Picture 1 (tube, one colour):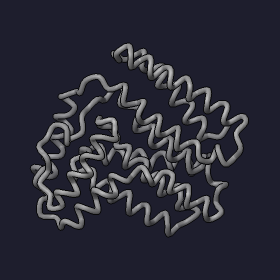
Picture 2 (cartoon, one colour; picture 1 turned 180 degrees about the vertical axis):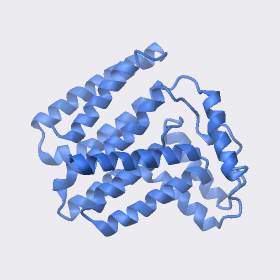
Picture 3 (cartoon, one colour; picture 1 turned 90 degrees about the horizontal axis):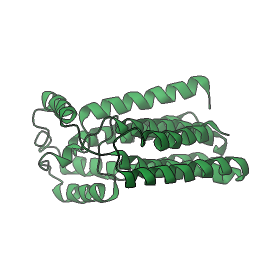
Picture 4 (cartoon, helix red, strand yellow; picture 1 turned 90 degrees about the vertical axis):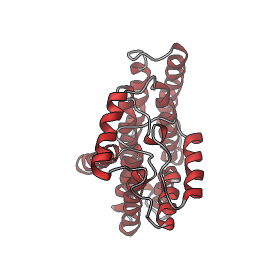
Length: 263
């Protein structure tokens, strides 16, 4: 079994166990347990009999299911933790809902677009490797990506908070129409809860570093995109600033461990 498959397998085992240790409603608990069990079996079978091409792409399915399934762990927000996170935003930016009101519309529009389309970077990063003859890096790439993203999902079982957009007034931004569209997509297509650390930041850093060793220029561009997503988290009020810093630290730590010990 590949290390990336072990990461996914262990994460779904974690979900199947932790949902019984937290005050999760019974219906959700059964969903988490049953879906996690199905994924554990699917990962095991895929690792045993599936061709390399399937195993190279399956991790994107694992991380996608893991994201939505983790959202079922959310029960009630910790208002004290939310207040602490907001305190740092206000300390660093004043009123973050108006702090970026004078930024150029095209800057804000770019940030909203890269944040909203962040999920495309996961398969896109591996597609870049595969199309340039680096499919042999699949396990290394997906080990970084899954460990970073699932590492950001896991604390939701304990640290339960709402994203800033759920508790603040809408930010004043020049690209207001684009921001409204991006916000609608985020509210409609995501779990609607906040991850601490930021999964967006952690995983995009992992994508960039996972690509960089084989495709340095592409990796450097993706690292710039990851930095943009970190800024977008705060400007668009999708994440707290502390989430962003913690996500960056997690992504770098995961990639460092994989780079040193291999995958």
